[in-house]
Length: 604
Image (cartoon, rainbow, N blue to C red; front, side, top):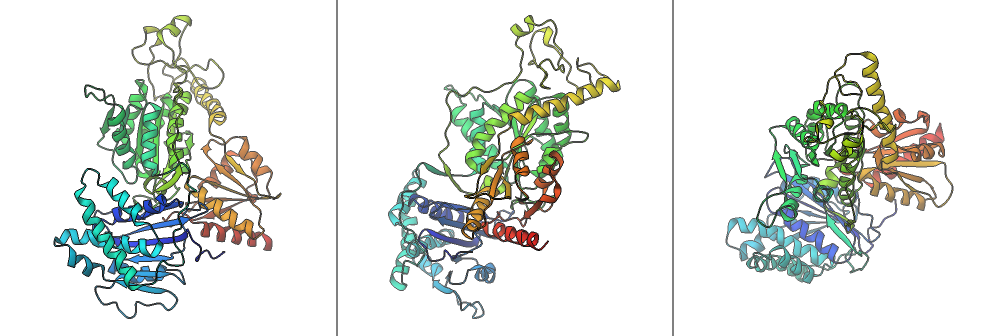
């Protein structure tokens, strides 16, 4: 791959610290300062599932071209955790730099000839200037911010402005933090050559971009969709969705007299949360539950009820590694099959696949509309990388003329105009019956059934009546194919019979890998899937290519399996490029995986 080590606005900074020492604030300060410099940037947090005392890393990638997916390079490692020093040393790319706290002597074996090691006595510096023990721990992290700013040419005025914004309600804290930053900054200026060959050069490329995480955007999207009920059981990495929903509801859904116009319920478990959300939707509210893979497993019984009883409900699944408990603070795209066919019996569920926080906002809104239009559970599949990491995206916009699509709901006036109402009768031929809200006139009353029922809503064990209903649900599935967001096609700059399919958080790294391959003369068309069920666009893409690689973050190639199940594609033209170790997928791994597959095909 091309070496971008020496280019301005193109580097990877990785910071190794101890969880619970205040490093998150310091790391976020650096990432935001780079963003305020006008340089595209992202922040990836690798943290333990315990509360305090374990190793944690934060990876900042700055790239003037906007390629901000995870990179496997490390140009500058800030090694502030003695427990992980040897590992951190090994991660630095040849020609890179390692910055460490030289207050204590370093083992001579901790050395590499192909990198530059820089020692700054951070602990000594802060101990000489701050008296409180806890403050010293916190300020040591802030001091490395100053050192990094000097090495990378980050404007301290930007950092000062950020501190004033962060501590607007506690202005006295600004002075101490600035003092610690200056300790690190001035030490570099007095003892080392600076800035480094990779550095920040102020730019104006960002336009109306913002920094936001997917959980925050998804919670805001639920508010703008008109959701008034949220039920959940806390689980990493999805809890931030409900935290965000609560914050925005307090801002937008509290009346002038202090009354809340929303309900948030922390249930006793995931199954109860699903039941509460489904019940609220049946009653006419827009309700949802955020969770992760283990939660979906526990919710499956109620998901099957909502599918068969045709009750709308939105499930936001922020995916993490599995199986079982897995690694709660690592990312994967491993719940596709689980969500597509959740519950026992024959079930099929639509899901949306946002690529970043901006789409988390918009697809949250779409999820509610689709769920009510189709009268069925709809899933939005985010993941930990999108949900909990810092992404640079276009400013979130909203159409003020938006009107929620509540689907086929009969009012009392509508009921007066019809001869009869049968809850599960397909009047329009699209597989979607009409429904009423509780409290409607007597003419709109029906019995909610998860047991066998006929199209009139009556209980049945008659084979023909039962099959008529479940076959009609397949007609609804065909209708869903016409309503889901279409895939996005990126054509190569010349004709090619090679294609790549990816989805969700894999998108940015897939596009970067395709650009790198194009530089080597390998032309590849790219299709980003945005939803399930698939539409005709996928079929056409498969028909137009001889070799199609499906890139995804799970072991078993779940999207590839879905494509084989739901289309008539020749399985022989499909292959997988997989990464499932728990870190966000990188362009490097896709690049290497594609070359490996193309080489395999050329030898066949």
